[in-house]
Amino acid sequence: MADTVFIKGHGTQNDFVLLADDDSDLEMHPETIALLADRRSGLGSDGVIRIVRSASSGIPGAQEQAEAGAEWFMDYYNHDGSLSEMCGNGVRVFAHVLVTTGRVAADAREILVGTRDGIKTVHTVLNPALGKQTGDSAATAPAGRTQPGSAGDAWYMIDMGEWSLDDSDDVLVSTSGIEVPRPGMRVETGNPHTVVALAESAELESAELRDAPVLDPVPPQGSNIEYIVMEPARSDVAGGEGALRMRVFERGVGETRSCGTGACAAAIAAHHWAGPASPLQWRVDVPGGQLRIGITPNEDGTRGSVTLSGPAVLVASGTIS
Image (cartoon, rainbow, N blue to C red; front, side, top):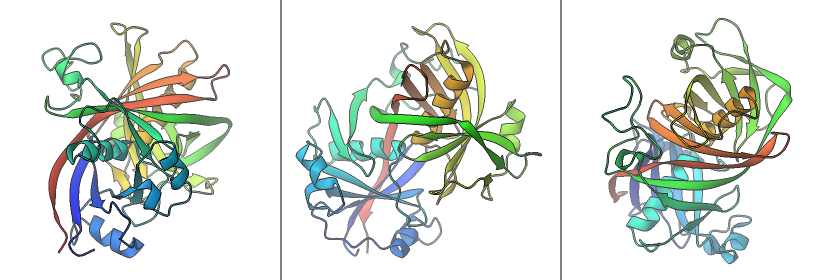
């Protein structure tokens, strides 16, 4: 990877190293990826993303995505070098890099991004820090509530595609710092998730996520695990807005400051538990900031589509020596 250009960025402090490999010249080895992501001996990140043209990537299904208009493919790897299907925070950062480096026109109305979970459509949206229709202003937000981010942050909305949930059989989740195993709901949002509802903020804070939680039964592909506490809904947003706080343990990574697909899964589970009359718009506060989720469920509430909105920030660039 010598002389490879890299960019480092984050979405609500879920951070990534992005490698410029437009024509697919790099060989991506798990050991090398893990070294790049290491926070002591490498560049440090939750994941590594290769920027590559879909048509030249050699990734199964990418050629078809190129023919459908997704020129660029987000080749995503977890912190430990393992492959992952998708990353919602990563897609926003990926799209922001495409725009800022001129790979995509700055005035593009939509950006099609190829992923292992299919094409994701990305739109630029208003930063809530600059307007009031989707979020509190800094002057009026309740004490202790996470702010959307700085006024300079670029915000993007992603059509995350289809989701599904399985409420027929709970998964028991054993977590250090929480006395007894808790039931979790399986939600698929491109990645597998298990969402655990907690009664109060003290429980959320007491969870010790240095060690991997134990799932019973263990999902075949593993699972990200989201712990959530629901908060009072807002009534000043059209249709109402649900709110929750979340922490997440990501497979192949550990606890991260944010997870986009996990925030989607958390909002979907919260809406399901609260009932069909509950809000379809949700604010999700994570340790790294704030995300907004839009849910469109089917009639029985077990499938549907979902959007994810949040910031993308670029912090550094350079060349690997």
